[in-house]
Length: 375
Ligand SMILES: *Cc1c(COP(=O)(O)O)cnc(C)c1O
Image 1 (tube, rainbow, N blue to C red):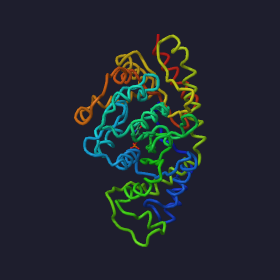
Image 2: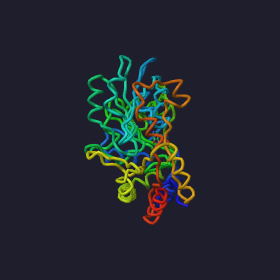
Image 3: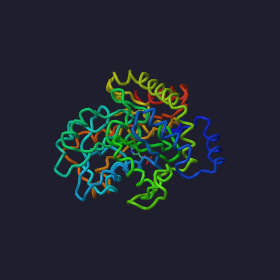
Image 4: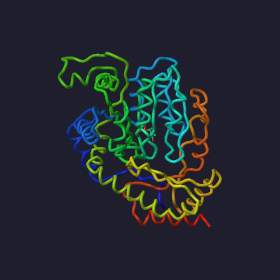
């Protein structure tokens, strides 16, 4: 049996978890959190990085930092995880969906401007499968309309756009370290902040509305409750697991990219024969091998393909059901413009097994099994 995903494990996780226990510091913001924040800031040239309890809570923080007013609108793709939209609701704004591009499954930057109204405050981009959105065009639109740009870079840790790290391109970036992501701590995430003016309020939101972070740095002599907030600090036990993975970030990235490339090369013949479609990575984007997807003819063929692969002992899964067709999407959001690609392309897409440490023997077996499906 080849599973769809195996949570990443590089070998030193238990050693660092034991260290955290021996340091008698297992709550948040201990030495491992400081080391991870600093590592992420340096590796990605980010002004400020704060580890969080999940990618979702990083998105929630970004939206709260925007200080939306009732009736404000935020543009996002419908082809994404629920968290992208729930965070907008947590921030008190209305999610407005626009269509995606079929080649990358990312938001179609040419459809954004038509969705902007006098209530629009922000654009959330999702770098699907770790392939960056067209950020130059999107940031240009945001500047002209005075909008905040938030990157849902949950899948894009280590990906770049024109040489710059995903997560550092917009005003806020959000990473996920869930067990299904390239680097993990079980449940976890990080908020990346571009403008230092937001640092202090971000720390306060993250620390239950208190200025405790400032107190720990010795900048004030007692701490107090100063603003709204929540608890977004991950436990040192989880962060110790992440620290082991960050130490091996390059190796994990290369390993995933090798599997991705193996699939891509092996499926060229089926793609040229017009039986499947493969992902497209724009030349100015470096992805991180987060996911390998392919597209079949339609929903019916995809359902049969997943069944066939299961029969071969291989876990393949489809992905997002567009949010605008979900019960909460209908209740809280609206779709602007025409849904040309979102529904149609989401119904054709299937994801193949992809995880750190997958052997070439296993990926070859996936390819062989997939090829048996096509007469
Ligand atoms: C995984 C993911 C999230 C949520 O991250 P969690 O860490 O599970 O909260 C949000 N958006 C996208 C696009 C994701 O892939």
